[in-house]
Image 1 (spheres, rainbow, N blue to C red):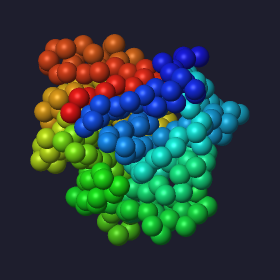
Image 2 (image 1 turned 135 degrees about the vertical axis):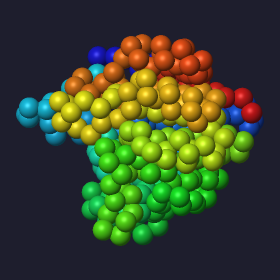
Image 3 (image 1 turned 90 degrees about the vertical axis):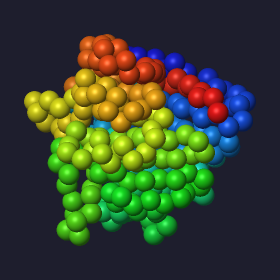
Image 4 (image 1 turned 45 degrees about the vertical axis):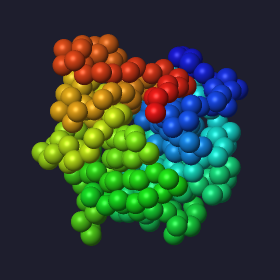
Length: 280
């Protein structure tokens, strides 16, 4: 099993290290989970920090065999101001992660697709009346971060009975930095134009691809992620959604890195538990 770059006490020690004023610090938690820190504020994208899927599918014909050890127990993450869920799939909406995280951070805000509010409340077994629900084109300022909803296609641009998107990505503005976390998505007409309205510094994009034989919804592959980052003018692209489950992964060296280099698109490969700092 893959060992994180920093894990448990070592990861917490890295988080406790001084951060240059005005800089942005980004840590990959594995799968699609990231911790963003700036000027004393902490935000989590789609954390999955349990073994719930491995346990759920252990005796089925679709076992979710974990590839990378957990970076940190969710209850050990403190001072989290806001957490997101981009959609209802368990690796993006995990009760085994979110319940202990919410208990450890009772002040924490929760940004979600408004279409999923009732489902999320049921899964987590709690009152989410204070959750911030977004849809494509909607925005909200939360704990010093400005969120913009961007529809995602996983595999389709699915909507609820009220026409609201059930899969979202988020543009997040924090100070001078703009981050795009796509959630799970494929390319679709109009996506580049939507994203082109923003000056994106960091694009966080999945690379595990769209393989129907896996019997799960698909994502960008490495070549598509590199192309999208280039088209939207991202200053750097960071791949994710790989090296978590054996049946649904990719190697960034096969498609992603060669295509980024061909396109001259700057990129950064992180190990789970690795932290990088972007200067002010």
